[in-house]
Length: 458
Image (tube, rainbow, N blue to C red; front, side):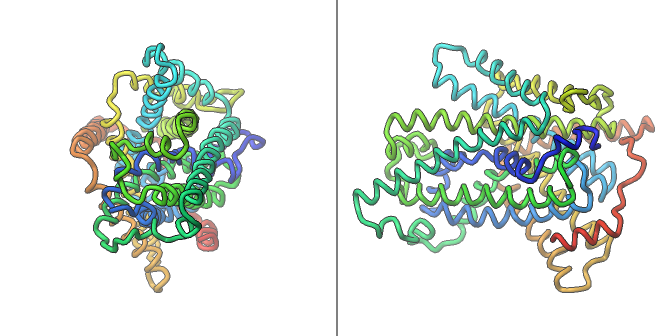
């Protein structure tokens, strides 16, 4: 589907990584710190390390399938090719929940932040204006969007670096260098493992969205090599940002005693370190960070709808339309924009829970697909290395995903289950009416040279 973008505007590795990091919203570390610090007894950095390892195993599964199936569609395309059209549709349908809701959440969050800056303007109007801007920018070509996102990711990172500087400066002023050069944030005098696992399970959700870069495969230079690298680098970059920021927050706040409200500690964290002026600047940086995530999530959602429309899994012809100038799936972009306006009516906690459900469906399906493709179809389980890569790693990745499943809220399971049921009803309708679920002629069969490329890269 490279007709989506002409060669001169194809994304580079750098562009795809920027979109992946933007999707993960690096400044979320400040929002979750108080909660996880309480759960882990003051060991948030260690919990981030465990979460990074757990997510990395699933990221490896994504990267391996991205080499063999170098096309957009993420978990939907991989499962469709490996496990069949019905399973692929159910996974795509479940994943669609994740992709459609995140742009809406970004609209809702931005409305809340803008309301704090502009209290006299109704929040519904702020959401409409914000969503319209994001939608318009997504109508442009994807390379323009990626270049724009580089700025919107850079600003929050500069603010995080300045926060770290303030922490070091304040600690050196109050104490001495031994209070800065220490491993206390890693262990904090506690060696129990269960709280760490619980904290890591919460923090795994901070990495949701790394898989979105796979939806850009058809618009990326040499996708077979670029996308797998971008997946791994995006996760590592996000993990490093989360870990470093959490380290210095934990260094300044060894426990939650300084917070009046640990569950919503972010304003206090920033206020105590930098004062009122820095707190205001931080709020603007969070808004910019949310805008970057909105651009990335909107683009990914539109492209997943485009792929499912091109396969005629969603039988609406206009979904296959590509704008002749901007080379973007403009009707899909507009659909995501319209759905994002539901932020005016939605509750934040419910939407966040539903996003987690869709992501867990995708993560589970990809780990299973690696085992099915390499272990069952290709029979690559004869050596210790193959057993590690094709059985053990996907299995451990699946276990880490199961831990996240266990931490989902009940309403997410109920509403997500209802969404999945709707997808199954549609599959049943297609079977009864003898209607093809997908217009793909055959499942993609990887060529032997593709498999050799996969082995050389990973």
